[in-house]
Length: 344
Image (cartoon, rainbow, N blue to C red; front, side):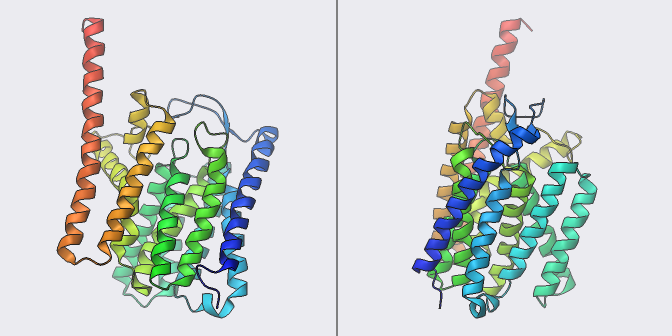
């Protein structure tokens, strides 16, 4: 048996970190030669041209480590219901994201492929009714896209993945779910390898190939693992509270203002913080502290009853909401000062 805390699994994780870090280093140099550069525009949060698609070697490193683990524990990984489906779905979405990085796919085409793939993955894995399959598929696609939306400043998406997957590794290992624990450990290690080059100031960006892989895996994991393992759904989504609330509230805000919500923009709360003068390093650090706090709340949910779980969710949401109100207040104060200076 290949155990979650065994030396072989930990060795593969170390290999994933090394392959990711080395692969991203190579991709940076290749991108400069091939001209695969993200040039700043009015919606960008960066000021200088930066190589993109650094997420490709990160994904390759995680998948290679998981593939080696699966070969060495073939009987065990096949018995982990849903895990192969989640990993395959994430890889397919990564390929779609890579295609989008290169060709710029239309939002409608991208969404249709995503929802179709999610439905097929859930149908192939579970015996759920069609209604629950559709609900699960839409949730998975929402998680996939919100992760992509939040990949806008240095270190944020990679840092979220590193922290959340380390937490999931511990949770699944605690429950004895070796396969899910190993998969999250490899993703955490590969994300750390990427972060070596993406931590502010970033020398490379993840691109849709990387963010789509992470969002797809976490989205599918939250549905599949919640049904196939003793880990509650709430524990699998609370670590992403900042991503979920920021993206959802921003979407409703744009719809309320009758803006083209499906187009790229820079009105997420983390982007608004950088507009107020905070550095990427400071904003990312704050966001990751929120992730750590959310993971602590998720851990507290495990031994708790429904009432305590509800209180923990409300506490996390209230804390993030207070942060959003502070951003709004700072924006109003900044606008008032600018108006007083211009005499308007």
